[in-house]
Length: 363
Image (tube, rainbow, N blue to C red; front, top):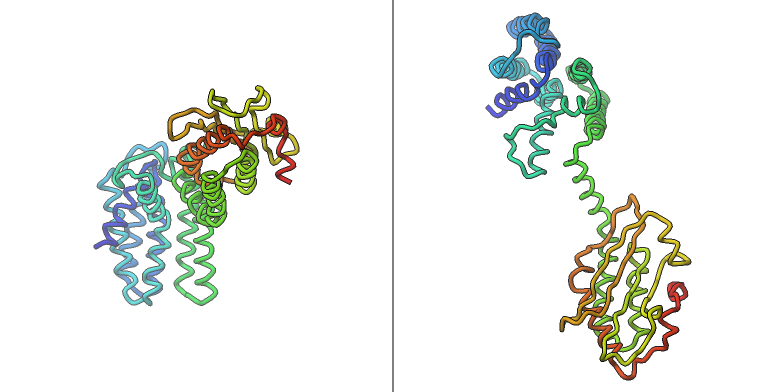
């Protein structure tokens, strides 16, 4: 029952262009005709060739520009007949062949059905909603004409039909070759269709592979948070920041300090900025495409102590860091550390140290 319902609706699903469902069904029908002849099933061969003749005669007027159409009743009828022929024609075949031949011969409608269900589940939409992201719609968006799309999908259906016939005489090498060709073809085809849902799956898979580096980078920020909680002088605070950002995926940072009346350290405007970069000079990062994240530093007592700006050059490689670590606890901990350092009487720092680039500390 599941097989009949699935195949019946699969052919209804691909009936989106003139002649597409009927042409794909014609290739599958010819496969079952050959299978019935090989198995000496005269009833199966008669039903297959009769259905093929009816589809071929109909296709003459259904090809673009069509004058008659299948409609739901026509596509569902063809799907039902083919699913029934698949069950009846392979009863005497080995189990694997009985399953593989109809599955491969119905390659296009089954692939379309699986893609549609998968896309809608991934994107959180009901699986029975309609959209314009079917295979034939994607090919139209790529610039193919109506007829070109249908002919391309005819070729795909023909390849699936030919591969399914190879399974009539299964051997170790034949079986492996058919599975390899089907798997590779489906993979490459789906890649070229550029579905955003599967691109998101690739991103998740890549992030899983890179999980070790993500953990390393996250730990560098967590260690910095714990060390900032006990930092007592400016040199220690500076070294904590440099060590944290030197070991993660950011390329530079700027610490802008905001003096308050209770501060024990007095410094000029130029001395209130702390710069660090993985490049020899801070100006080098501004000459390349990059993005920045500005974190306002506000203490737990709601005192503003400045801002921290982190930079990263645009790269194909994803940021291997949980940004929430930087935007939640880290700014308040850093602001508290600055409050503690700049108000402590024994933590006075000469203004020249604020002006010094930290490339030496990085090295």
